[in-house]
Length: 174
Ligand code: HEM
Figure 1 (tube, rainbow, N blue to C red):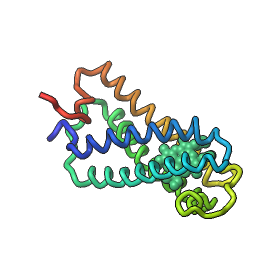
Figure 2 (cartoon, rainbow, N blue to C red):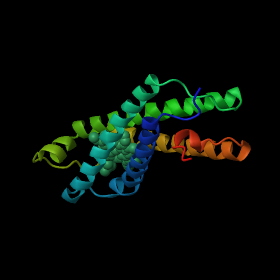
Figure 3 (cartoon, rainbow, N blue to C red):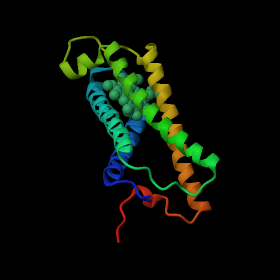
C-alpha cells in the first residue's frame, strides 16, 4: 500500500487549497463588504469564475480518489480515523453545495446575465435577501470551520506522532 497520494492528487490539492483560501478571504472581507454598484462587477466576475473552477476541481478530485487505490491508513485510533474521514467527506460535500448555491444565487438574481452577458439590468441591492445568498454565506462559514479542523488535525498529529503526515500530500524530493 502506498504512503503517498498520486501526483495529480497532490497538484489538485495544492491548487485548490490556494484558490479556496483566496475566494474565502476575498468573499468574506472584500465582496460582502462592498456596496452592489457597477464597480463591483469585475470583483464578482473573478469570484464567480474562480468559484466555478473550484467546483470543477472538486469533481475532478472525487473522480481521482475513486480511480486510485486507497492509501496506507494513518496509525491512529479508530475514533480519530472516523473523524478524519468525516472531515474529508464533509469538505467535499460542502464545497459542492457552496458552488451550487453560488450558481443558483447568481442565476436567481440575474447576476450571471449581467456579469457574463452584459445584460442591462439593475444590480440587486443585497444578496442576503435571497435564500440562496444566506445559504451560500452560511455554507462558507461551515467550510471555513472544516478547513480549520483539517489543519488542527494535521498539527495535533504532528505533535503526537513521528510519522511524516505532510509527506503524504507532497512530493518526495530525494
Ligand atoms: C466554491 C467556491 C466558493 C467559495 C469558497 C465562495 C465563497 C464566498 C464567500 C466567503 C462569500 C461571502 C459570504 C458572506 O457574505 O457571508 C461569497 C459570496 C458570494 N458568492 Fe461565492 N463562493 C464560491 C463559489 C461561488 C460561485 C460559483 C458563485 C457564482 C457563480 C458565487 C457567487 C457569490 C455571490 C453572488 C456572492 C454574494 C456577494 C455579496 O454579498 O455581495 N460564489 N462567496
